[in-house]
Image 1 (cartoon, rainbow, N blue to C red):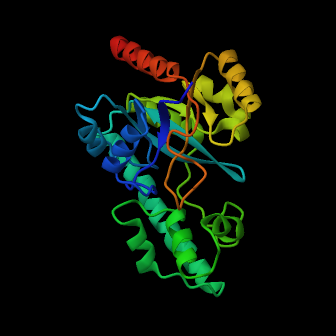
Image 2 (image 1 turned 180 degrees about the horizontal axis):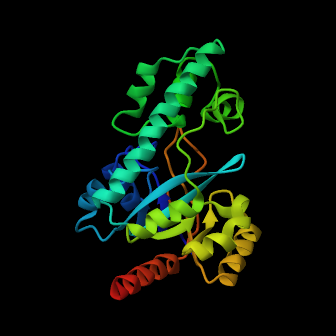
Length: 277
């Protein structure tokens, strides 16, 4: 069985390397029939992707990925079928993005104090119209010769416990779940293997699913997550977490085998909630 579904895709609206239109074209080229645009803390790429997919047969699910904090780590919550143009929802996401910008500036300042001055103008150029994030800083560090790869920048300097890391506006996983629910979305715990201990409480908060199929996950890991999802009555989703060749290069578009039932189940749950509303 070839995967024809990818429910975790990033575009230039956040830290991906392909535009929303480019993502749609790439998805069609490799035979995908459904994708979800899940940019970090923004839905600004969704309208373009929907327009680009019009009349193609490719289903584009409007989504988002919200970053949250727990002790000494981050947890990401995906939201599917969100009302992506809702002004209240968009204003909350703007707050999250503003905190990313301020955090990025503080991280660049830390790197400068460490003797690794990063050109802020270049960081902004790399980000383009997207919300500035750590991958943009990492790319600037790579271009200036401070590191040999984006991964090395995270590992040595700007990762969660790195010397140049800076905190941002803090949101709990449960608050992210509530934010997505308020936007009529379906909240799903992203790449949940390291955060499976949160599932019982998040399920009480309204979590709908777990990303059981993910880049690098073994069949055994996926099976554990499928069992966990079944235990708590959650849907199983999956995706590649595609960003592009220079960011997470091992995560290829459509590179994770995701059953089409994942889309069918999400769509059915979404329609059911619309009917109940």
